[in-house]
Amino acid sequence: MTGGYPLLVADLIGVAVFAASGASAGVAKRLDLFGVAFVGFVAALGGGILRELVIGAVPPLAFADWRYALAAVAASVAAFWLHPALHRVRRTVLVLDAAGLGLFTVTGTLKALEAGVPAVGACLVGMLTAIGGGLARDLLTGEIPVVLQKEIYAVVALGGAVLVAVLHRLGQTGVGPLVAAATVITGLRIIALVRRWSAPVAVP
Amino acid sequence: MTGGYPLLVADLIGVAVFAASGASAGVAKRLDLFGVAFVGFVAALGGGILRELVIGAVPPLAFADWRYALAAVAASVAAFWLHPALHRVRRTVLVLDAAGLGLFTVTGTLKALEAGVPAVGACLVGMLTAIGGGLARDLLTGEIPVVLQKEIYAVVALGGAVLVAVLHRLGQTGVGPLVAAATVITGLRIIALVRRWSAPVAVP
Amino acid sequence: MTGGYPLLVADLIGVAVFAASGASAGVAKRLDLFGVAFVGFVAALGGGILRELVIGAVPPLAFADWRYALAAVAASVAAFWLHPALHRVRRTVLVLDAAGLGLFTVTGTLKALEAGVPAVGACLVGMLTAIGGGLARDLLTGEIPVVLQKEIYAVVALGGAVLVAVLHRLGQTGVGPLVAAATVITGLRIIALVRRWSAPVAVP
Image (cartoon, rainbow over all chains, first blue to last red):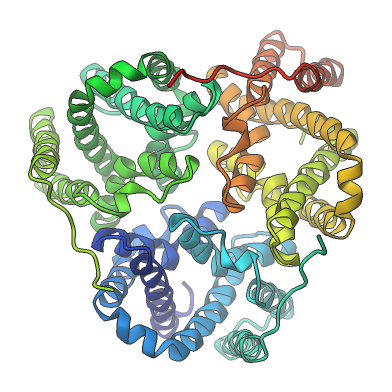
């Protein structure tokens, strides 16, 4: 984290949103409170843990800074008790999830670039940061990951990661350009949702 | 491993017990001998491998010390041949599994603390050491991990990890206090089994 | 990679073949184009990523050298469009897969030995390099890994890894002996396929 307090707050909001999505999946599968909190933790922090193992930044932030674990577990426990309400605000949750996608893509790509990963690899790491938690959430709950099946989600993250790599090459990694990049990713994801864009499936 | 020979023997017993549990799951799924040995290996050593990747202790002990792999594979092959007998002694197996839970929690938390992971993260790492192998066993055999669904298992490990962190803060990391902590975890797990304690599930 | 250009070319062929196998599994599960490319990427590079995390060689080659990612994605996209043709040449695909098994076992074992992993652990790492991608492919597509269920596949890799460790001990790690070892592994795998060798399954 190089962005200081504003970035930390934004990061923790992303963690909380992804944790709530993981926890909701756990509730739907009738997991117990521990299982719900665990799936929430993994959904929120799994992508970041994978990123930090890949770039050699150990121990990962999820274990090195207790605020990340606390944000994930608190949001998961809240989702456990409030899940009927979560369903009623599912549009809000989707918008927050899109914001999390934007944020995690930007921070993930940037951290990889700053750790010396070349641009192509850094874009892949950035995308994995954003989708890794959701992948793990689906595997833990016995589902084929939804990100592999339909909707434009990971591709938006990958495109956003390329944008971040270009900004990095141009030396434009101040708060302004990065917020703009996260906003573009979030906006594209919301448009993809509203317009029901989907990627092609092979003819059988 | 800082505890020398007694701790090594205890550790290998934990490995063998967890390997037998993994191997039994593999036999139940009609895996072949290799699959049974592989699931046993992962069930016994997967939690420790994850811990060592997270704290940067590479290569993990599972690859650096052949006695760990040998203990896991030997116990798995034995379970492959003896699995009807294993079923008859399933109460003994559950007690040994509780002992493995206690041991892996204590060693996992302590190794994380000694690698410089802060207390909250070290407790999470200790719990992951204890439950990670079982999680991987269930994923490999196509099940939603049982540790997420019912029973008091991971929570006992987490509570035990907190106890170890407190002992560490107090400078009480001799063999005595650590054996006491492992015994408390093992005892609580057995009580949870006998009393059929379970964590709450969300109302649908 | 210490073998220079010939080894790089061989490595990329192995990556492409494993990516095509992963992509085919993704097509069969009706994943979208992104999902097919992702499963292809993981099938081709997941084993190597795991190896490099275990030996501490970060960032893994899959992220550090764009040619690996490009080979995996290009082969996956080709398989997405050409999958009916792939089915017609499935014998060729099986032979190429056997070649990939031989190659990945040899390079995986050698890299582990050169990173200082002791012989037993290095053989396990070499085998994991060869089977790890296929394991991850099956988990992502909701299957119990085929390598755990039947056929002689991983055991051939493990035997080949032992051969490489012996050659390494004898100082015979030039291109000649290594190509011979890869050829032995590939040949044994093809014989196992043709003769329908399989490992024992426990009596229920």
